[in-house]
Length: 580
Image (cartoon, rainbow, N blue to C red; front, side, top):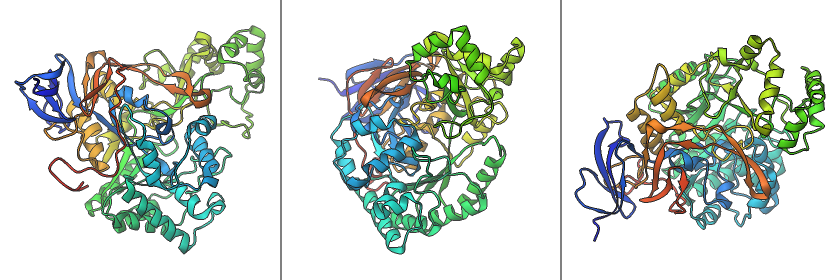
């Protein structure tokens, strides 16, 4: 008879605590880690981890699988990248609570804000809930390849309480604020991990309207935060453009103060104001010095658009000649574009005059910061590798270079254009943000922006680029693992995971760092209704284990689905409260 369900043997254990790696074994029984070190007993299943790193499963606190989790048991691409727990409901958008008459409104909002095809949402969402607790009940009916937790978003609360007045972004009455606060409290008590909101102009509905949460009065957010605090649990999350840093921080400090709960805010280096992130970090440091729990969620590389004929956007999206063939399949578009006459016509029509009424008419011509995504992408290329530099070297226009990239491989060529975290042509600012004491890795947006952004590979970027390949300024392996497992788990109140210690949840990865390579994104059409999304694979994860059960082996699913819905914060082993 075996002593354990699973023993992972002879690996370099990086336990998530931040301590030094050590050679050892990890034993698992009943979904929990029971022994770490030298394990004498035998396991029903044994994994040879010699030459590999054994680390906790990664906790991704910023995803948008709110819809996909309803219809899909495999939350890819996150589960390909060592992630064993994801948190949805970010940025103030989601699908609960909701009245039946408002289903369409929430779909249009998610379609616009998070670039998820409306056809997929219409076909995939079977609804069956009104309250947030009922939404969790529906999610709990489906097993998954990882654990799913979520937060209650602001926009559904506003629409539930205010109806069309919320869509018109009118100010809420005292009675409506009280109803939103009560709904937020009820949702936390039903299992939401926290409350989220959006204060950015970048978040718009399919019709181009700003999200219903934008411009809400400070009083509304403060009263919701106060109600969350009354539960004694939960977190607060927001995204803002920081039009006035002092003014935004006054609100965030008040929300954190009246609730007594941790608050996190998205932080990016913006091209137009490249030094402002430091001002924000200073304000966060000052808030923590005053006893407030405020942190920033930061990306781990440049955040930007993936451009291509397969994608939502590319530099010819608004070109009137290209639009005449846009109804064709990608392969047919590429074939037509190879015709010399069509090529000349499209290039001649490519002017700076863009029809901004066309969906997706955004800047996709920053050629100085744009580069080709090859089979194994370089996410920190020098300016010399940009499309603009390549064009100058070849004596051509950037448009000509882009054109040739897009039509390669039957239209599968892709270009990457960072819109943040790359103002100076390198990731030095990202390193500064990542290593700040009051930040967390996040913003991968798994499940969202499925036709134009593919950042759910962030955890793998931490390992491949920041630990293994960056020419200078690399980060320590133990530090990176701690940040992506224990620190992210603790930040949202999941104290039962993120470390390889006895009593902790047996979520873990066996990783071959020498083989780790992130692949170029690829477009697949597997969403409900044949909807398209971008997926990104990676080499190097030998085994991924959730609750003691192997879910992936060398990047391929085992078919096991041990993942479950996480309801509310989870206490550390031996404790009865989450104690965030």
